[in-house]
Length: 452
Ligand code: UDP
Image (cartoon, rainbow, N blue to C red; front, side, top):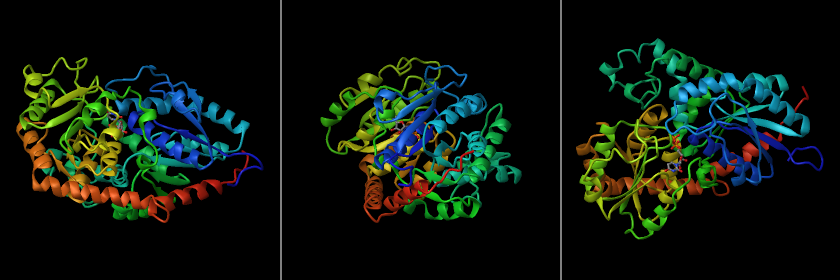
């Protein structure tokens, strides 16, 4: 490693303060630490990670002007905009202090921290952007401005099934369109994120190259910086960066279930639904007759503490074959031999964690890149059933039966297992992910900072 004599080099990482962003950033940091780098984690007070779970990293909190308590149903668009404004000054000071104390090689910043670009430029520090979505989803975000200008996203309801030729295989209904009161503002932020990503020294994606070859090719046509594709979940667990306590009783319950008999159900850390939808989910599970492990995060249901809105009769109907917990040790659950399927919102981490364990999916995307991921899972990789009809008990029951009992589900399971095996091979010496990691280490080591 190319550092000052007798010294270790430091990398500064700056995760966005959401579970789906903190996990992959700290996994990447663990990988880099295992390769000899010192790690400094700059983080907001909002959704702050627990330093005691990562004793080998140095943590540097910065003020963000937000409440410190984790939100059970956060509004990411609003928060991303606010923290990009509020963190500029504190981040600059923090980085300045870090640079004055040692040999910092680069900043690895979440793509959504677009303000960091001007800060590092002024300090002559290289900035690598880590994008926590798939490459396909990133291209969909990068195409949004053009697609809006072409009118694709106007009158969306009438053309939902139309293909979007700029970002195959996506249809209009898969586009991460933003439908909210200050959508204009949100689109501006996405455009800034894309623009500042173009200026980065390199891009890192938590993905597996062989699954996204056409997308990576298209990425290179639009983004000149070198790109590194590495599936982090296979290298380090995300358990240590969990913001909520993971309920390990689920593992002992799984230990007593037959092989591949349990459907694991979770909609991640941000998605939320109304009581009507919760009831459809509950009756779909009950009517399917299948075993299930359901992670119901407090905040999953609007205006509800936890389980008080479950329909009466649900517990009796599912007694002995299903349990509900608040938050699961998800990777461990997915790797458990009793789990045969994952009903997911298709956040990218959940999608990749499922593929990494060879578990086929039922897809219920809520918003953003989840829509894109669900399309790839169902139509490109064919390892899942997309619940296109939404959360409705009849469709849910049908999908569960198909996935867990029928030949179609079995075929998906086989394909998911093949994807898992490919990832395993990719991480071995000479495999694409292993080589990408070696190249990333060489790339970072080659940085020579001109003191600014
Ligand atoms: N997760 C978990 N326990 C749960 C549900 C989710 O540990 O009960 C973890 C999961 O393993 C993943 C992250 O939370 O790493 C969720 O990220 P994802 O991108 O799937 O979705 P998001 O929460 O960002 O919508």
